[in-house]
Image (cartoon, rainbow, N blue to C red; front, side, top):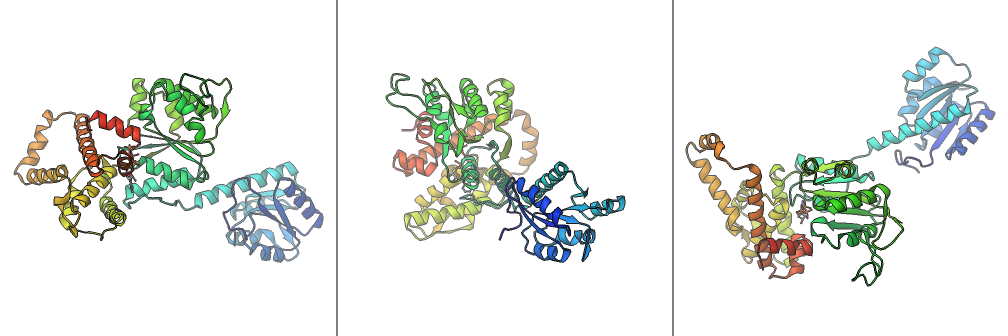
Length: 475
Ligand SMILES: Nc1ncnc2c1ncn2[C@@H]1O[C@H](COP(=O)(O)OP(=O)(O)OP(=O)(O)O)[C@@H](O)[C@H]1O
């Protein structure tokens, strides 16, 4: 049996005709089938009410004067009954009072017999559209979380938005500081969407080399340039049928932005060296930690592309605005690590959580995971994790914070001396750079310098890892 609300827009609907005139039933049933829907017809109200109990019907075309009762009086019961079908009243004796009563009782329309068939089919189409919208709005905004943890209001709201995005095929822009889970959300949206069984292709725009970017994205044909020894599909066509994630989209060069805008508009790609364009059906998710509006105002990001990619925006909160989520994440990370390493799950001392709570996590969840994994490696054989096991800079931060808040008058001093503060962006950039540097040093130490392991642990692509190692002079 069909479940209520399961009918998707455009799918076949079940329509019941209740009319004591057999020729009218036949006429309506024919019109309904011509519209691509299924019709059933009965001659009495009693039979009709019995059929409605099945919960199968999306719409009821209801006569008023029936041998066993008045159709108008039955409207409220039908609307609230199983399946909550819409109702269109069809009457031979149209009058203003009847029309008013039908409207007040919630019927979709009040149509006089003999109806103009075009008008009737229009009413049917609209009533079904209305029903679709109603059932879509009723759908619970839930999705499989994939590996997304956290129950703070901020992350719960983002999950709701991701569920909405999954239910549609619009372009999505996911923004948020580094390590807030943009790629994780993009994957979850893909997996929960109708494209979930098709490829998910992530492109790190920051790692695209300038000379090869076009061929990496759009593909090339053999012989298109010196090293093109075979045809290459290109990442966009790899995503055909599925989802394309343009990670760090703010790093795309202006030239690539222009070519990509065309691809996005036309959903066609022209591989380097090929004359014709090839169709490509992908859903775009773009991610960035940059302020694209500001970039557009400065001319470094095309505003026409920006309008296209942010049809739907999800703004992920930084970890420091996610309340107690850090605990949930830390506990999960400890469990995963101990399971992976096949060691007893460690318990956690309160001071460990206190230190985590005091830190601002500029590198967000990625930095938290790395700090926990570092602590677990340091505490290898100890059964309990203490604050001491955490990386030094995190402990130093807490120590400084404690002293600052204990010093008499420091609060006032801070407030009054704000004239000499450096700009927030500089402070933030310095903190991010410092954190990235020490994170990468820890990463390479913990993984014994193995690049593939470092990529696995950090979630960075190989090229991004190399770029960052070079940036911070880490061997
Ligand atoms: N809510 C979350 N629950 C569990 N793990 C998370 C969550 N958010 C992020 N992570 C983890 O944190 C790490 C970083 O996440 P991700 O790569 O998705 O972040 P990002 O915002 O795309 O980072 P960047 O901007 O640096 O590319 C990954 O290991 C991811 O699994």
